[in-house]
Amino acid sequence: MNQPMILDGRKVATSIKEELKQTVESLSKQGVTPKLATILVGDNSSSKTYVQMKANACKKIGMESERIYLDEDTTTEELLDVITQLNEDDSVHGILLQHPVPAQIDERKAFDTIKLEKDVDGVTSHGFGSTAFQLNAYPCCTPAAIMKVIDFYDINVEGKHAIVIGRSPILGKPVSMMLLNRNATVTMSHSKTENLPELIKQADLVVAAVGKPNFVKGEWLKEGAVVLDAGYNEGNIGDVEYEACERQASAITPVPGGIGPVTIATLLQNTVEAASESLEKMNKINR
Amino acid sequence: MNQPMILDGRKVATSIKEELKQTVESLSKQGVTPKLATILVGDNSSSKTYVQMKANACKKIGMESERIYLDEDTTTEELLDVITQLNEDDSVHGILLQHPVPAQIDERKAFDTIKLEKDVDGVTSHGFGSTAFQLNAYPCCTPAAIMKVIDFYDINVEGKHAIVIGRSPILGKPVSMMLLNRNATVTMSHSKTENLPELIKQADLVVAAVGKPNFVKGEWLKEGAVVLDAGYNEGNIGDVEYEACERQASAITPVPGGIGPVTIATLLQNTVEAASESLEKMNKINR
Image (cartoon, rainbow over all chains, first blue to last red; front, side, top):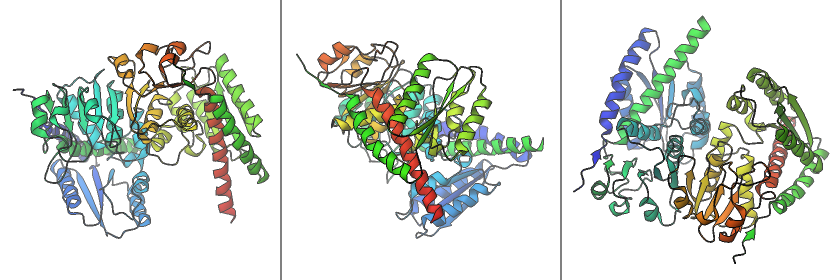
């Protein structure tokens, strides 16, 4: 039986956070403690848990965080006002709007109101364009986490054929661009794709970003494929049928403990970078 | 022998321009004549020809244009100053920086200095992100021209497998996103792609955006594939081996007379839209 390499995201996250701890300490000594502001609209209980997890993660590495809770019936205008205030608040280095937001809110408008320099979750359309063109922007966290796992485990993607299943603005689209920029050949697939199993069968690398539990079947995989599961469905179930895929894959991320922890570490890393940038700017002005 | 449909871009362009003529007339009556500013840095003779062609095209439909010629040794800073002035000039609705620019210039920085509302060539990273997310931005002209040809000839792309060869910021990347947003399954390929002919063989739709004369061979195509050739190499040669590809394809764009004329029509269309938007804004202020 095949014994694939288990791509342990906790290890990747730990290594990132250890380094961050030192950077945060050094920044704090220079008078700037990195601070993440998270906004939660409404009472979604999993969203509450995520926001709490992110706050705890900040605390653990010495960062500050601020949680803003808004009512379920908040309007887009009210939310934009809150974001604008945070954009202008020099003590805040990163802004995260927890999604999904209630239906009455124009989520895209809210995301795009976040200042590029504080878009540490990498959700703005401008940030996406900058990432796609390999310019200076904070990469969207989940796709960047996938790339960090690839790098940590030294997986070669150059010239390889990757298939991305799902095309959301915060996962499928940006990870496709990141893989392309690392010289992979990338197939972007989705709900309208014809003959998906046949396409997956050809891929050296499969990124599941579809948001449907156990969607990718083991028999769809090419033997020896690398499987990166960015799904997190209710009950901690990924987008791939884990056991069946494990038998075919040469490497696979578990759920939980795969991409998830690295996503949070990436959020912290982006926020710490934003704080460093703001310190640099201040130093330039004072010089 | 197979008789493919010839996707005549001149027809598409004519139909667009006829409509534009009327819009320009109506805008002019309301006091706003759409105006395109083109910037050419240096003495590249094909660039000169392109700029001249664009000015003529403007004139033909009643638009204004302004050509700015800068010396070969212009610095990035000098170019940015010119762009900033045009950004602030209310009489200018669209700005086009003719590329390529001389090597000493930071082309990306220059592109990204163009105000989003005047980016009628669709070259900014912000505009790319907006296009990818289907927001309100002027689409990059050559990729948008490819989509217009597809629409004019009623080619169905939903669920179909498209391969894009080439990944430039103004062609391969945006056309991939546009096809994806129209529900095609899209494979993004490039110089590092392994087994390219094998991948092309599977595609229902082939977009050649690689910039190498006669690069795509007839025998690489699946029988009945749709071939869109966005290449324009010296001597008016496309990126596909036309005669051999014609024998395999169900539809194909010629070079010249394929995507090229539609690209210019798209540039005009974007500029006219920018002028309409600016008139609407003025009317709102005066109301």
